[in-house]
Length: 375
Image (cartoon, rainbow, N blue to C red; front, side, top):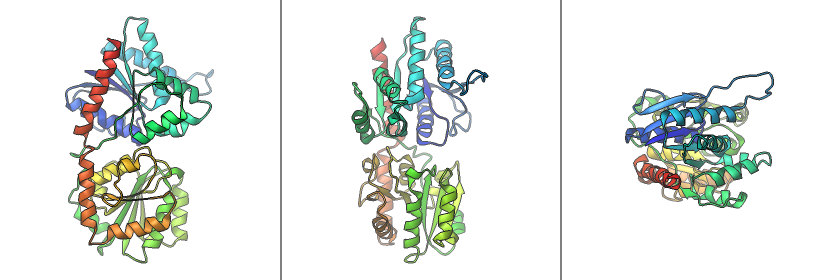
């Protein structure tokens, strides 16, 4: 099968899932064509059966903002026509699904009929889609897609509740490639960070307010007097400078490191004892799944799709958003030397249920379902 994948090529969850999905499909023998404005971050090397088509945007004085959606639609028409794609799979409702629909209508006038599969990831529904400026387009794009999937039951239910969606949405959870995300022997990393055997806590995000990194620092400030520990914060974003200032105010900077963006996060996860995700909203929690695959238990909030992944009392714990006392109490329990091995084993066992080999056939079935609608 020849599959066109449209995604954001950045560090965000939707781009990561789309790229890893494409690479997995290519390993199964499918021909995968990525169509986006720059090379996806996890498409770091040559991969058999994987092709990349750059969407170039011309700048004209007439346009205050470059018309990316139009450029994307035109590129889709070109790639579908000359590469003879079987299906277009777009990740994120806007502008990808709307551009794909425009391309589909143009192609139909040429006698080419191609189905669209749209995957909803989270902020396209919970944040951007609720903006009155975009809501009609989001609703329309979902309803005219041939097959729609969501990365969690929570996100599916939010979509039904917030939009006038008149069609079925299939839940296909996010996945992890356990051939890459697995516990590795990185004793030298561990020794450099925790020279005196301290416990190591970790957080990875884009440092937006919704991730509540402040809660992590407050938790760590309360935990630190009770247990020797270090904290690694991976990623970057608008809240980082404020968090660095808060770290100084709490007098915990000696035990906290801001590492910025990292490519090989599996290497760092391999030395962690606890992964923290106290988000205000989280459609699934891909970073938490990747941590679990590396045998790291998860301490998270109880929102969105997180309860579909993190099993309270087994793979970690969940607490209400902003409940620092509960987070601190649960962190101490997980990190207790009598409990940590059990939590680590359960985290890995849970991650196995979301291995890419389990989830890929569900996407293949979605493509077959879409193809059957246009044949």
